[in-house]
Image 1 (cartoon, protein in one colour):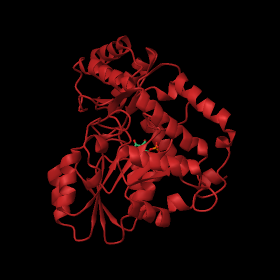
Image 2 (image 1 turned 180 degrees about the vertical axis):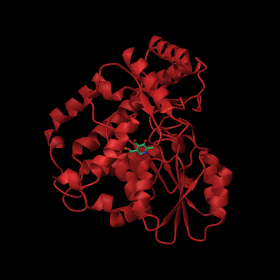
Image 3 (image 1 turned 180 degrees about the horizontal axis):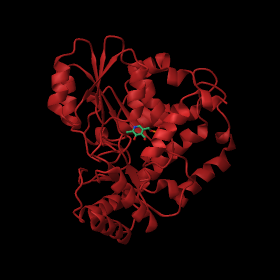
Length: 369
Ligand SMILES: Cc1ncc(COP(=O)(O)O)c(C=O)c1O
């Protein structure tokens, strides 16, 4: 049998022995402290009704796109949604992707060339690393959020440098010093690329918009599978970068475009976001309630991701099981996903969590620690 002649089973057994084997499970019932649905959009009946109405008015939205956007798969909706997104974010242009993973693959596999360097924060998302693997440029890592280390690396480079950061990191729940890094990027004539997956929607249209840094970044990535409760992503950039991606980015060119429904759900998500500012305020309020428990955490005061370090895989599993028995859905991050000694429970807070739920959750964690 195939599985006897290939080494897959051995690797799987190793994971099983360590207690880190992954498998797909159906969603269990429970109180959501683990999803990226920060504002509850994915559960919103109002948003569902809006989307349903769009489909009733135009059932064609549900049909396949029939090809790459460069052949038969482009549409009025894709183009108009891109224009709208660019306008909203105050960028010259935007390019849609079916997911943030694809957007990062496209950016990092395409923009940097052979003699360039991509300098990534050591906690950057896997999709950036995978994009770098497809690139001919060399990849270097700087210590998490460490400006000095970044500058030391920049100083030593001869070719053009790309700096990759997230505005809000999902493992640690802390912000990048975006303004300082933008200043360094301009000092060293480098290109800054910022992934806004976790900041978009939670902090308006993201930190680049909030801090008015559009002219200091070569590209920003906003993703729609988290606070917007939809799916997909956009690269925000200038016309030249967009045109370059359309011409040279394999993850954009050699794939069938998503259905128009995906682009329409993104457009509707923006409308819903614009009309429901109070949800982000409610979320901030819930984050305050969580922080009032004074649990030790490396996460930022206003971050919807709050990490609690439980530096031992077995202890962490025990805590997660206790929480699960009490009906709380949380996400534990074991080593080697994070460095040994920095295993953590990741709590995602939402606008829809109640104060009582948060107090009960933090009470159990405090007692366990
Ligand atoms: C920072 C970051 N970038 C990119 C992605 C990928 O986005 P998507 O889920 O839309 O593929 C994620 C999602 O996990 C993420 O956390």
